Image 1: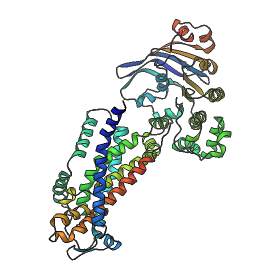
Image 2 (image 1 turned 30 degrees about the vertical axis):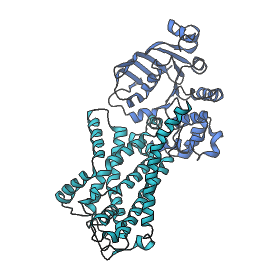
Image 3 (image 1 turned 45 degrees about the vertical axis):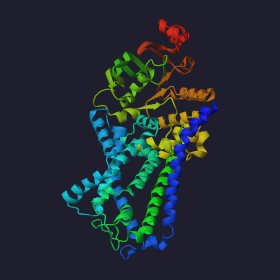
Image 4 (image 1 turned 135 degrees about the vertical axis):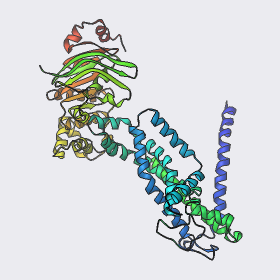
Length: 279
Length: 248
């Protein structure tokens, strides 16, 4: 009996430890190679001399501007759709088709979104290569995920609160807005931060829609091109003329990206822990 | 004596499952009417037919009529919000909103555009025999109250918006004997102003609190009458068996 249980312990624990070790190894490798370059100046100055010197400020700025813009486009429609699925959709063929489509969309490789963004936003709508085109493309990528997160958040609130409000003669929309949504807020925010963590590392959707190889400085206009962290790492690692010279910058940029993804992931996790137990 | 609620040949289905079978029932005003019967006999569904809460369940079909003050509440042009303002409800499990005690009551008042919210909150709490216990903690979360207090808060929340009918769905099933006694005392007090319909599978409770009593079995209304008549001289064999404890 003892032998058997320890066998299953190792069966489940060994893959976990291998996995953990890999993550820790990658993190340390990035820290060892990237940390010497990291400094306040590195984070807040422009690249110089074909990116072989200077900092990555426009890159960080671009990534954040882009992701925040993408959320501005996606949050309202996602939350409304989530409310629709949780409280309004009837159990019929239309709902089934919509759900299937959303699932399919969330499983689609992100390069497909990139191509769609190029064809639709950049060309058909003639927005051009820009923050706007890229953030719209990213927002489409995040919408299926945010809808699911909203629905999950709303359904985590006990149905008895909803029933209590309805029994008081409260209109359905008021019950959802005043009773259900405030309670679902931690889970909704958690979903939003997880999506943030994922979006900030996406490169395929912005590849054809506006990300630039090199810009001297930042621009606030949504119609301008921009630099972004994951693409910056890609070009420093594979496309740059002096690959060996910029390698440490690539490592440091990766470290910064990892830090942000981790930060948003941790915020999402903390919010998730705040979910109340009602009974 | 005036009839407040009247079921006329009322049947109800969930999908293909017939839950209520041709119910005819007249519930008198300003009395306590208990609906009793074994689990799954349709008594909660019957209660929820009075404020149309069954509408929330998909695939519900009804046939027949339910009148409140001679108005058929299953008419196409009935305003459900007005109906549910008029017919308050308290659920089996206490379900105060996860807000402060004050907000729990003020929420319904605000939605229905009452004025003098503060006084009305206080009055509702006094009427629900809860004010003395919570007056110093009005802005604390309602979830910190005990089960019995939560249930009385739910009653306060319901009576604050001035309903005429209060539906109680096994309100004491999650409470201890002392909290139950307080709740029953409150029901006794409230019947002077409201028509009360209470569902219970506890016959002693039905005998203690009700003036009229309905016995249901497998979706049918078996017997209805004054509580003392039903308990002392049940006409139907099934009612007698239930009172003798032969059904669960």
